[in-house]
Structures are given as C-alpha cells and as structure tokens.
Length: 294
Image (cartoon, rainbow, N blue to C red; front, top):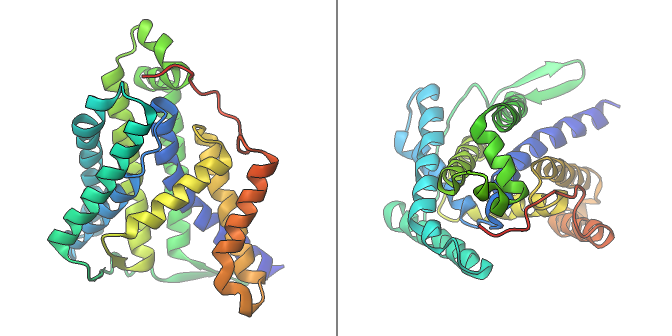
C-alpha cells in the first residue's frame, strides 16, 4: 500500500507540472484558436532568467522568472500575432513555429549550446518523511503552486470583469466583440497569463532538473500539447485532467514496466494517449469553444 501511495504522490506532483504547462496552451487556444508552439520557449526564457540571476534570493528569483516570460509573451502577441490575427489558422500556426525557432536561436547566440547548471533552492532538494512515505519538498511545492494558480485563475475568470470577458470570448468571440468586449485587451491579458504560467513551470522544472539549455522548451510544449488534446483542446479543466492523466500513465509505466522495456516508457505512454483519442477524439472533456474567428 505504501508503494502505491508513493506512486500516486509522484503522479500528482508530475501531473501538477503538466497541468501548469497545459493551461498555458489551452488558454490561448480557447480564445484565439491558436496552438502556440512558442509557449515552450517562454519556459526556456524563464529558465535562462534564473541563470542570469545566479544566486539571487529565492523571492527575487521567483519574481523575475515569472515576470520575464510575461513580458516576452505580451511582446510576442503585440509584435508577431496581432498583425496576422485575421489571417488563416495556418498562418498563425506558422507564426508560432517561427517565434519558437527565433527564440531558440537567440538563446543559442547569447548563451551557447552548452547546458547551464543552476541550483535554485537547496531547501526544495530535500525530502520529508511521513509514515512510510518519502516526500520531496519539491513535489509538495509543485502541488501547492498548482493549487494556488488554479484557485487564482478560477477566481480571476469568475469574479473580475476582464475574466468574464475572457470567458465570453472563449465561448463566441464574434458575439463578444459585438457586445463590447475589447479584443486587444482580452488577448493581451491571455498571453500575459500564459507567460506567468510558463514562468512558474520554468522555476519548477529548473528546480527539479538543475539544467537549462536552448531546446528545453520542445519537451515542455510537447507535454502541454498532448495534455490539452487528451483533456479536450480549449478546455482549462481538460488541460488539468489531461495533465494528471498523462502523468498517472507515465508514473505507472515507469513503476511497473519490466526493466528491459522501461526505455520505451514514453512510447507506451503516447500509445495509451492514442488509444484514448481513438475512443474519444474530442478529448476527455468537451469544451464549449467559440465558433467565430477573432
């Protein structure tokens, strides 16, 4: 029983990180019908912000690692996406790929291809014992951060006028604009929130791996995309459910696959995702997404 509880705790921690990554993708897609593949580079930018800070106190590090991706996300929307907002979906998609490669290559030019190592917090690297469980403090921090972000995002979307406008835009942007919703403000805010989520994920990823490199966003955006598709593309609840489900499958495979097959863990995990999508192509939760284009 203790072994099962340990695996469930590991899955909850990993799923929390996946949920944060998935929410950033789902939020933008819900409003703009855009899968922003440059979202992973926001994670990378936040991670390099931590490298530049070096040994700054953790409150300063957290603030900068979150604020820098927010600024880059807002600039990304204003400079790259706003001019092509009325174009075909493929144009928006190509723009996101172009931004992804641009930011990766800028990181290569500035920092080089060699991975940088950094220890963000010695405190988070320690573990606590509870009954027969060994609980890393980083796992507890990841779960706590995810809960706080979910509560804050839910309160923002439900209890503020701007949040209500964002929900209306996700339902039907054309009608929302007719009723007075300001498109630029809503979309810029969505990108800012996605940048904050990417910054939070960056801090947790770097605290876990201790390594930063230009292509680190590729794995992050792949996980985010799979989680949102699995949960239901465009649904914030679906992004959380999809992230948790993907993490549960990953941890279970890692724990119970024969040693000779553990190197193929990700292949089995994505095969399970394909099986779910064959059974339920629209994802686990069907979002009430907008039919109108921005």
